[in-house]
Image (cartoon, rainbow, N blue to C red; front, side, top):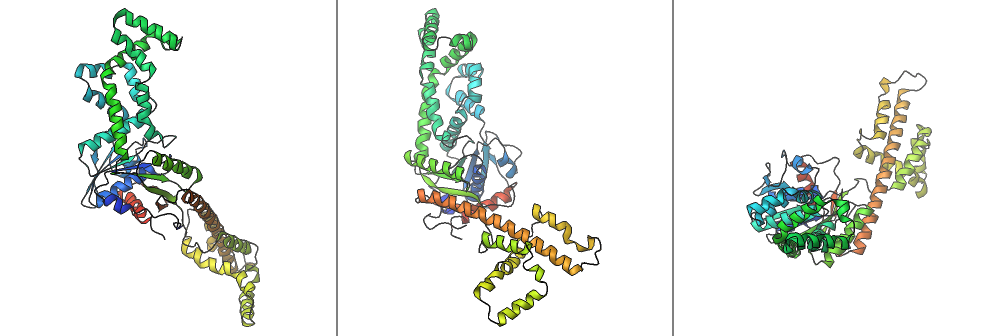
Length: 459
């Protein structure tokens, strides 16, 4: 597959080399390779001389394994084995620890202890909807304010919607500014039994049965938490707004990562439109795991026709006379149609022989058991040469069908990509060819980075 002329190529190296680029955010739907892309970009940037930290929010911990680190936590850790003048650090967001750090940094010791030990806070910091995305924004703001790294690469949280990363600060801010929170804060400001009486009246007015459903102890825990956090609420909103402006700044670049599949590219298109609406700088689209073929000139139709010809015995049954008939036809001036009949088979055999050493394929493994003629029972009536020829033809037909299936996949991916580029011709695209296996180490990440750097060029 090659980039369509309507899609501008995405050149990764100038983006990573530019000292003005301080933040790269990898975003997209789940399962498209955001974590691997972020890690590969980090390796590439470090080996080209930058001091990089990769922040991942992926709970699968694949990043630590591929970088040769036993574990990642809320503290950046140096990655060994980088081949270049730069440095690479990696960390994985600890949502609760980040929330604890915010409390400890913005409250006096006694109030911080009261908050950290509060049951409602413990539940909120560990599982409130949107907390992970919000804490990712908080950690990004912390890393940027320290000015310790040349480049911060963010792997956005795996969520049902790629937009959660942008919406989380607003959602948490709306929660902290909501009527429920303001109502819970009122008793503390009024004090004494009058405050509790007002609380009970307010709760009855708002929900009627909330106290019965949640219990009095839960309400007291919530009230205690709100009272202790009262002075910090403004800080949450201020920091969220500051990080949001940081994402809009010229030094930030968003990379939307997608697979060449309909749902993933639909989500990518939606995210591209949202970034434009929010005036956030989009660098381009990384189209990950794109399939290719070294025999693209052999179409699926021709490969399938050649396989059917072999399986039907159209060529094999002619035996030795086949060569003579072709020779005599050629000497007598055969028609183009006649010569075209044999072209798929004749073109396919050298292509398959060059490309298709695939013992791991279920089709190939089935045939490998019968390709060893010496292991077969003796069959005097069938000469060995005929048996081996038949086996080769059967294997070739199977490989031709595999090639036809691959070409269908390529065609489907190309159509899906072309629909995206037709809707968003302004978005630069880099295609990353699929690897034969998963990435497990730094060398694998380096290979991904090389493919990514070359993926914006027309091939």
